[in-house]
Image (cartoon, rainbow, N blue to C red; front, side, top):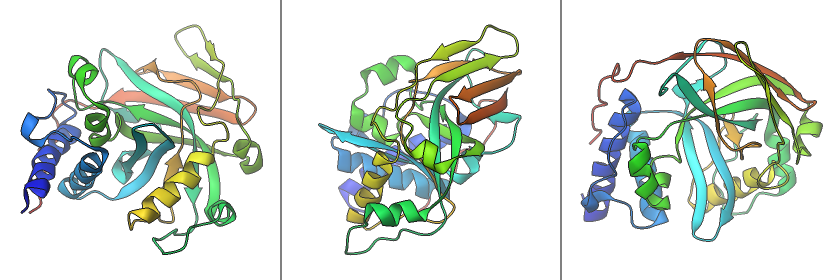
Length: 270
C-alpha cells in the first residue's frame, strides 16, 4: 500500500466508523488529513469501500473557485417511507429542501462528453426531497476543518428523504421555489426559495461530466440532488411535518431518532 493509499485508508476507517455509529468526533489526524480535493475524493471512495455500500444517490453543485461539490449518498440511507429514522441532536434533525432527479438508465464512463439532451433523456422522474444533514465532526471541529476535510466526509450528508414525484417540466425550470414548512406542533414558516445554481439541472450536467472525466458513471435508479432552495434548517423529531414546494407539491414526513452507537464499526476492507 502506497503512502497516499494508506493515508486515504486510515482516514476512511475513521469516517466510516462514525457514519455507522452516528457519533461525531475530532478532525482527522494530521497524518491522514486531506490536503487537496483529489485527496478528499480518494477518501470518499475508501469510505464507500469500508462500508461495502452501494451508492443510491449523489449530491452536487456547480464548481466554485477551489471547491468541487460531489459526494455519494448511500442506498441504505435513501428513504421513501415515514416514519424516517435519522441521527439527530437535541431533538432536531437538520435538512435541506431540494429536487431529486431519478435516472432511468445508466450514464457510464466513456470517451465522448454527454450532451445535455442525453442527460435529460436519462431522467425518468423528478421528486421533491430533503437532504438529511449530519457531520462526522463535532460542530466546533467542523468550524476549523478545511473544505477538503468536509468534502472527504461527504459534505455533511447523512442521507436523503424522497417525497412525491412532481412535474418534470415545471421542476426543471424551478429557479425560484417558495418553501412552506408546517410542523404539527408549531407555527408554519416560509422560506423564499431560490436555487443556488439557477436552473436545478445545471449541477447534474456538470456531475455527469465530472464523473466521466474520472472514469466513473451514474446508474439507473440513482437520484441526484443539486442544491438547497432554502439553505439548511432544523425540524423536530416525533411529529408530523408537511413541507410545500411552491406549486410543485407537498412532502410529508415524520422523523424518529436513530440511537447513537447502535451500529458496530464496519470491518476495514483490505
